[in-house]
Image (cartoon, rainbow, N blue to C red; front, side, top):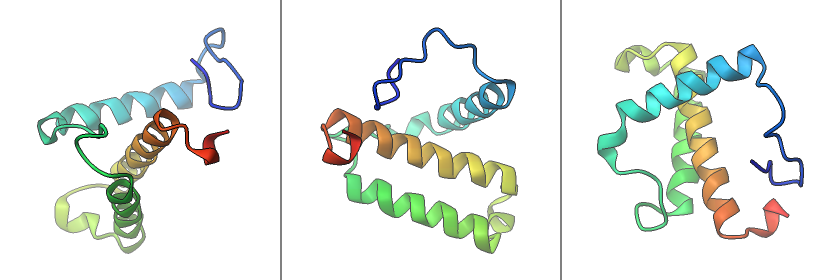
Length: 98
């Protein structure tokens, strides 16, 4: 795997906190598989940016109380949208990723 800055990490063992968080991210993604994903033909980069900000706003305002999400799960949602955005920018060769 390449981190986008020329730092391959395949030879590193994940830190326990990173592994735990990644597992939570994957669990949340699987819960939402029915939504279709974040590929180029699924949604725009602008949509992902907007959703990232919405999730952060939910975390700040604890709107999550209405949805049953805990602050921890809101952090996972924020991170998943950040990951989706990273992935799309990386695939498109964004100047920001170089």
